[in-house]
Length: 243
Ligand SMILES: Nc1ncnc2c1ncn2[C@@H]1O[C@H](COP(=O)(O)OP(=O)(O)O)[C@@H](O)[C@H]1O
Ligand SMILES: [Mg+2]
Image 1 (cartoon, helix red, strand yellow):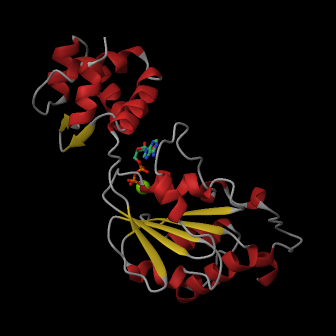
Image 2: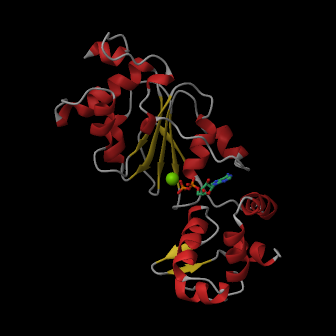
């Protein structure tokens, strides 16, 4: 097993970042990343940093931006059911007993000197067993984790209006016309609206509109609560400036 961990096994060779199974590679940060200079400067190499804050605030984007070009990264989404078991299996370690997985994971990370992004942590109990003795780890969570020997950075919404407008513009210019049109038209709705209402506003079929609304949500231009869609005030103001 240690051969697999060190990447020297003849059967399965994992040399360098190229050997990381695709689903556990660090994704690229947003192409138009803006701001966060202060937070970027605070994240520590060779330590554990927890980025905590509400969903959608920009924790993962910040982590990915910082981790970009900092060695071989491993991305582990702790929100899925068996994150560590799946990862070990992907590295060819499929029959590790459940109570030994965390130790084998730590060993893999340490020996291969991976920088680690533990995304969407639910609790300190979930994270602690996965922390390697050395190396760089960034954790994101909606909760404050109060991990021992970690620094915790509270991630707040981007407040600089100019920056946000710049960011929205960058997203807007890349929208296909149907989505851009929906974005502009729906921003004049004062209250949250559903698919039917959006279809009526746009004069389009509900199924087409539904896909476009989902895409706008995906791009963080629209928020979805239950069956309704709505705009953050800054985004609505931006959409209303568009023709
Ligand atoms: N600083 C930033 N610059 C550009 N886009 C950002 C920035 N922060 C977040 N985003 C975008 O905002 C959305 C939500 O950010 P994300 O990092 O996924 O939030 P969280 O991880 O806190 O839920 C994503 O589409 C992301 O690409
Ligand atoms: Mg995230």
